[in-house]
Image 1 (cartoon, rainbow, N blue to C red):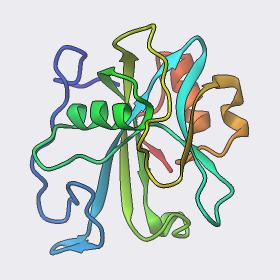
Image 2 (tube, rainbow, N blue to C red; image 1 turned 45 degrees about the horizontal axis):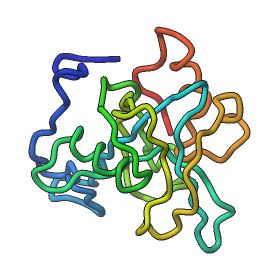
Image 3 (cartoon, rainbow, N blue to C red; image 1 turned 180 degrees about the vertical axis):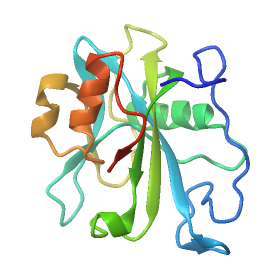
Image 4 (cartoon, helix red, strand yellow; image 1 turned 30 degrees about the vertical axis):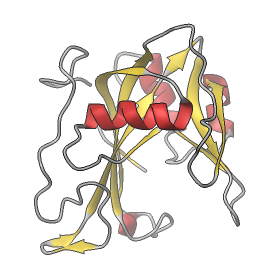
Length: 183
């Protein structure tokens, strides 16, 4: 799904957050109600495998996540995504079109991932240097354990957070896909 201004030649941008929109990773409630955490995630596919970051945290059995994260003040979604992919995987990417939107509404999901409303924008990305291999950075996020090329056929069997393996595989397999899906 690519909208106006979201093609490869015109990277997306984000307007400054308004009240309650939760810019730059806000938490808690804004003056107009609960905040929404907005993040950008990369969908990088090579030879039938998806680039994933593995996390192992104390008290957690481990999980995988698409590389990406929150914006910094003054940073566009495309800039934030390219930076986060580089920080988490040491891979330089070109941010392409918006691919999927993932929404987690706490009250609709028993607050299994906490009380914060979250929206993830998943963008198709490609490596700038096809010979470059992703790797663990020298300085990494707490809990980050490894970087993997995970075969798409394995996605239904791993703990991918958010739990989007099925719709992600459907969207990658065909021209359709879903515009909005629940976490």
